[in-house]
Length: 56
Image 1 (cartoon, helix red, strand yellow):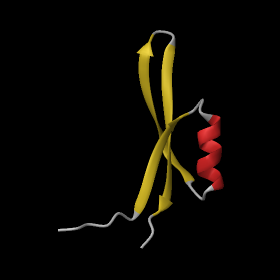
Image 2 (cartoon, helix red, strand yellow; image 1 turned 45 degrees about the horizontal axis):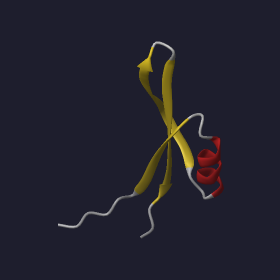
Image 3 (cartoon, one colour; image 1 turned 90 degrees about the horizontal axis):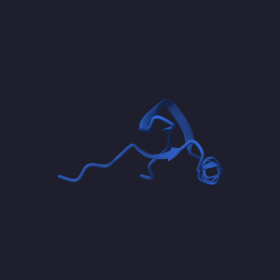
Image 4 (spheres, helix red, strand yellow; image 1 turned 180 degrees about the vertical axis):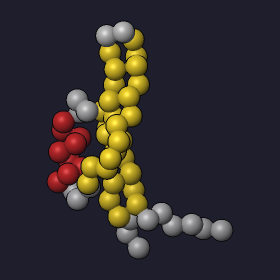
């Protein structure tokens, strides 16, 4: 059974401004929520989700 996705969601680390700008320029919208991953005491990565409606 083939299922079609309604949205494409991408995740990007908050410090990757070039990628964030590319997503926004291409119609992606930032979605609610931030995923945090503690690497060590001095480093926490924060990831934002961006999504766009999938082509039909």
